[in-house]
Length: 169
Image (cartoon, rainbow, N blue to C red):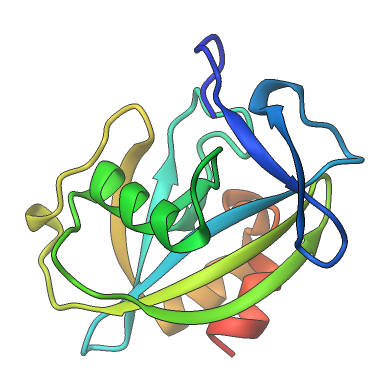
């Protein structure tokens, strides 16, 4: 989400992840439960691709997070959203993702995050970054990622610790 831009309507769900309505993304609050997708990208060197979020993002600006992430919008399912976001944010298309775990997150906001997994050996320069969403991408070794997350958790999105349990450790 970017400050000052006309926002779209997102799907609001109940505690069982069943759709119950729509809401303008700019008006969600802590009582709303919504849907998010994220793509966990690794390579054959056992590295993890992370993206540094743009400073204009409403949630976790300037912090490291999954390579691709998005909020499921009106008319979309989880699958539709992740393929759209991967193409928009990093220029990834024409490949199939593996469906990973779905995690319920309750930190500042409450949402279900459906993870997708991709293993690719693309060089950083082969990705096409959407500059208004992503400032930078970087391959992290597992050790580097875990060490950074432990020493400097403030550099990562708030929900990263929850993701670590499911995807890395």
